Image (cartoon, rainbow, N blue to C red; front, side, top):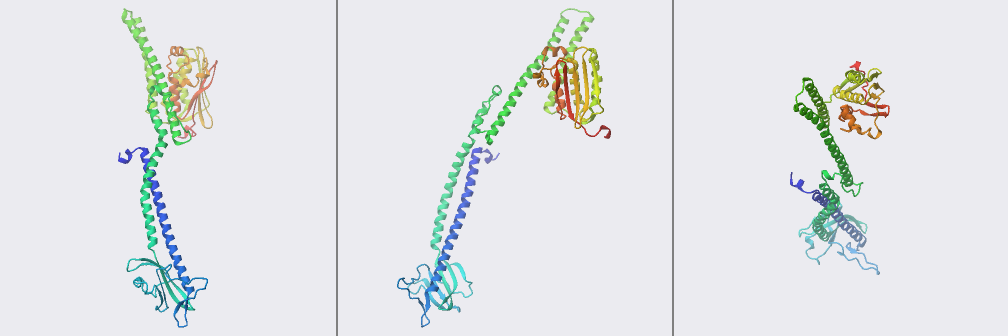
Amino acid sequence: MNGWQRLSIRARMAVFYALAMSLMLLAYAVLVAMLVHGRLKAEIDHRLDQEIEIVERSLILDPGGQVAWHTPHEQHEAYQPLRNVSWLDIHRLDGTTIYRLPETDMPGMDTVITPFEATRVAGYFSFTTANGTRLRALQRDIEISGRKAIARAALSEEQGERDLRTLYWVMGLGLPLAIVVSLVGGYLLAGRALRPITEMVAEARAIHAERLDTRLPVANPNDEIGRLAATFNDLFARLENSFAQLKRFTADASHELRTPLAVIRSVGEVGLRESHDEAAYREIIASMLEEADRLTLMVESLLTLTRADTGLAVQTASPLDLAEMAEQVVAHLRVLSEEKGQEMTLDTAGSVPIMANPSILRLAVINLLDNAIKYAPPAGRVVVRASRNDTEAILEVADSGSGIPPEHQERIFERFYRTGAARDRAAGGFGLGLAVARWAVETHGGQVKVAASSSRGSVFRIVLPLRISPLSED
């Protein structure tokens, strides 16, 4: 982890804010400098253009052919040269000078004036004189008393450059200060924005297994932090529910394991306490084996659910006929219904093609049918129906038992949940069969539920996606 990643989110947000502000301020400063520089140059160009225009209107040729200033009106003062320009000269078209300002009363200016270039294109240009003065010049054609001439005027750029240097100094000194201010401001703003997260962290650290009912504060459920807090609250709710189920599962599993182990222990102690004949020992061993079978069945069911929870169950699908599978399961369990004198019937309407893992889906059918046999009364009836519609394969298992109260119909698929614990134990159930059945169906993208239940019995329905192509086409 590099140094940048070690910084807190607050510090990184402050740095990003300062960088963003710095870039914006730098771009603003560059834009202002360009605008000011362009404005100063435009102002100088405008003044030069005005000056030459005034010169063109004010100069005349006297009777001797010399250039002279036009006599001003008595209400106006005469034109004062060099008021706005550093120098001015006028040339004939052949390049000879006919007028120049400043004259000899301003020593040193002759070295400033650049030689006339007849080939220079009329317009604005800048140059630096021999003494280091930066000038902006304009060369333009004019007419004096109807004669064409070339006028040049120049104006110093030193004042504009001093103004620009002053502006650069102000920006150069102000930009670092603005960066520091934006960094501090960004740090404070980030702290204010992240304060709800700090509160959430403090509250979350106080949550443990005994305080899963605690929820994080949600200041504003519509912003990102509020949605994050709501998401964590949903997570805590699921964890609370999972812990409650785990506690109930542990208690129920302990109870279910304790009972057959206690039976095995007590039967064994009775067998060892006194001598018995061979028939009695056989009965004792048979009781112990019966309880061992119950333990084996429970452990296998728990292992199946554990593999399902961890994703270790093999779920390769292949084409099969749900009606044919139902027929096989009915034939396998028919002996159990016959022992209770029950009538078991199978009702199918042709093939019901699906894609499924045969061993896993078989668990669902076996558990539903075994459940129906257990809770249907002696001489009762169990019916298995396999059918299909345009998109779904349907398997129903109906029994003539006492039914399931509505408040239990959703919870009977939970592990170790029973509506009548004494009856279930007497029938040999653990409350795991329906949980296994639900997992086996849902892993194939289907649903299993209580379709109907009353005092005359219950109907469990499995709904799976139908395989459109008939099996015979494979």
